[in-house]
Structure formats: structure tokens, C-alpha cells
Length: 153
Image 1 (cartoon, rainbow, N blue to C red):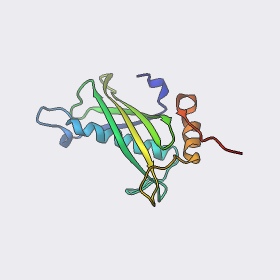
Image 2 (tube, one colour):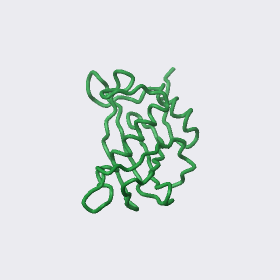
Image 3 (cartoon, rainbow, N blue to C red):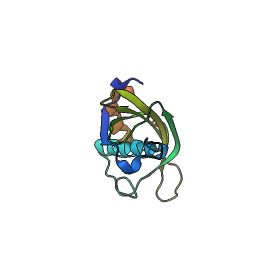
């Protein structure tokens, strides 16, 4: 994956309780690492996030999460997770992430996550708002494929 397309990064250090009986990070923790980086990305582009919503009312749910493992991480490894939004469609957002062990210069894992914007009243999918599309376009530039709704005259 081309890291030059990633403008956001988040670093963390592997803690002892994240290690499994094999002495490596338990596979489920990689999803948590990518999620933490994704939330930080959303904050970085100006979204206010709490434990229940974005901007006090919006919900975004994960509908697909793909994870490819390349190398294992172990206790006290310093990991950097690079995150970007690669596309925004009508109601979905495609996020990509790549995890790198900085000291060992090894790629650890790759993540593709599809999120769907949810209407807070009906709990059904809703179009991604224009203000969010514009924030991501401003941040990502030409590296993201963002569909903008057509305006009828």
C-alpha cells in the first residue's frame, strides 16, 4: 500500500494484556487498533465524537471489516496506524488503514472498513452529508473518490 496517500497517522504501544498465549498480539486487538485510529481520524477532520454519536446525533456503523495480517506484533512494539478515507459513496464511507512497526520497519496489517451513515430517527441508512464530504475532500484532496450529490435546478 502506498503510504504517501495517507495523511493521518496514530501511534500506540502494545500493552502486555493484548498478548495471547502465543506471545503475539491477539488477532481481535488489531481491529481495535484500527478503530482507535479511525476515531482519531474523524476527530482530526473536525467531527465531535462521544461514545454514542458524532456531532451529538449522527451514527455511523461498520458494515464490513477486512483485515489482512502480514507480520505479528508483540509486547512493547511501537505501532503506527495510517488511516484515510478512500471513497465516499451515497451513504457509505470506505476507510483504509495500514499498520507498521516503526522500529522493525515491518508492515503488520492492512484494514479496509466500510461504514454506513445512519439516520438517527429511522435507524436506516442515510446519505453522507455534504459538510462531511467537503471536510474529507479538503483533507484528502485528490486521493479520495468522493461522490457529490447532483443538484437539480
